[in-house]
Length: 245
Image (tube, rainbow, N blue to C red):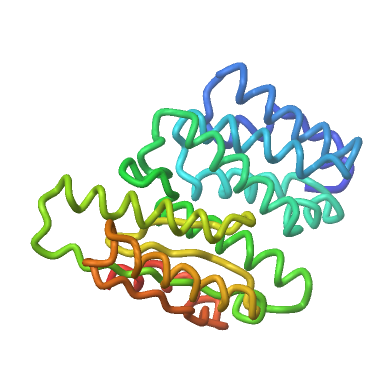
């Protein structure tokens, strides 16, 4: 496709390739992305956030949402294509999708019903956002962030007792890590994504003391470990899955 044809791109051209139907909200969001891309480039992240939100609300998997934006690229001039690949745009799309997915009919995939913490899916999304941001700044996630792993022994506990244990541990964790860190439950483990610095190490010690002294969690032999994140991109993506091992 030549530049002149790409400049004349219409939202319908993109939608026709995606088979998204005619839902008014999705059509309007897609139209906004195309128009913003060609008329006010600085607004592209906001337009992608809205697009991600609308598709997330409808239950579209994140892989299909990012794939939809990738298919828009070849229809646009190269300078516009670069805008779609910037980390701000990628992060905005993922953020919008996550918000829409949580508010839609798939809340259970993003929120743990017992603790109210994020799930493995939320952890993966946040790591992807961190990876994109760090790459843009010439660093790696392993250089800037770490994971705080909280383990508890729930063997032999009845379901209600185990639920209470994790609820209390989650409350203690979010009380200590209360500066915007991502806190999630992955299997039987609580995970915090935090800055790699002395303050995180200090707060990890504070959390261990609280869990060890609180009657609601002390009997579960709590363990709090600050873990390094993989520097390799492939290993980083596998890291979340390994947390359940």
